[in-house]
Image 1 (cartoon, rainbow, N blue to C red):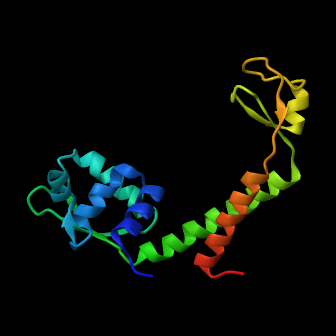
Image 2: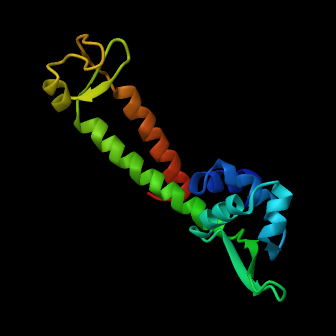
Length: 168
């Protein structure tokens, strides 16, 4: 798998948030860059930058070394982006998505769902009986949903993910 900017963006935004991607673009091709240089380069407060770096560190997307400042006695952290971790996280996120889709498919296939005609809410059979087949939002009678198209869509997505992950 080639690591593209889009793949990096997808992984980073999913695990650390959209606000972190500009930081990753800034440090991606650099090694051991000071958190103060990152903050000034992004025009952000040092605390915001540290928060973003720690979110990346939770997934081992960055590594750091620390050195003691001789004048002030404080530690300065130098950060490096771990590009090879993107491959693993891409695979891992796809596996998790596949697992969630399989659970959802199971739920869709084994339950009946009811919809409010006004689009307020979607309930399973048990919830519908609790509300006496009336929408708890607007009070209209809810109708049985044909979820065959949703099931078909989920099955296609599962098939696509299995193909990408090369599973049977």
